[in-house]
Length: 388
Image (tube, rainbow, N blue to C red):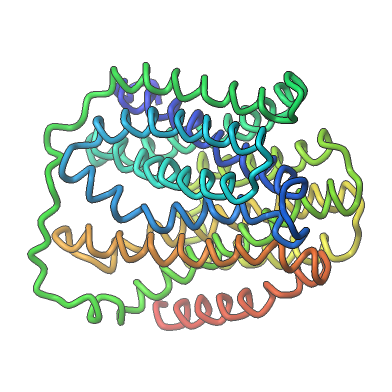
């Protein structure tokens, strides 16, 4: 790994800093929302709006990079994020729930830009080093599991209004990211993607490889986001667990999401993509079963760890299968529709999580994902049967 170019290491650190924003918001936005929202069922709306913002801005973000280059968009995103963190602080101090939701929505643009770090890393290395570069960059997610939650608790009581200090510390991370990205050198070969494909999008979408890849990524993100968004509310607000315990569960979850990336190549080699995704579905079923069986801290912990593992196996599997559905000159078109579907449906899951957990129960949240898991299981078994 040490033979990777400087760009990859810069992007790894910056992914950790950027992703800390996502972890931070999942951890505190529902708690802040519960104190500001006019209705308790709207508590997780700020968490959901950042996902909606990601879905809405992912295609424009890719387009801006194709016009202005990755570096300019990366740097601009740091400044943009710092300004929005200031808006979050203003909305919390003034107890404006909907302004906080708006700021959270706009922060989705920062997450959309962050999603391109792995592609920037791939462009910085030769083809044989691409899997290694991707794995290294994703390691930043493990760091963010600690960084995002630690700064949330560290700055919570600095000022009269809870979490204002946390947001100030968060803004410092993006100042550091800006400085690091000044040393990022975009690959010269990166130019605007011109799509001269003669195939229509319908033709591409009809392919089994596209259907399986997109369904796996959607299931991974929707189930993970739905359960994860509801977890801090269920643990801290409804079950009375401390912020420390809630933080430890979310940290374990995020680590489980990214740590397997170190071994992805070996897993694919011995199991194959389809069986790896099937194992992801099994992890999800186990996560639901454990969480449904008890409200104990250990049940939350194990459930969220398995939830993270399930996400990794389904999302990484789907990501590796997707390129088999398109030619090089169709890449922009197919990746755009894939990301829009994944993050769009994830947004719906995040939006509805708070409503489900407050109006029904934690158990209903868990049971409601089972039909989707059975559908994904059917799709994968069908794909496995027809490709052996």
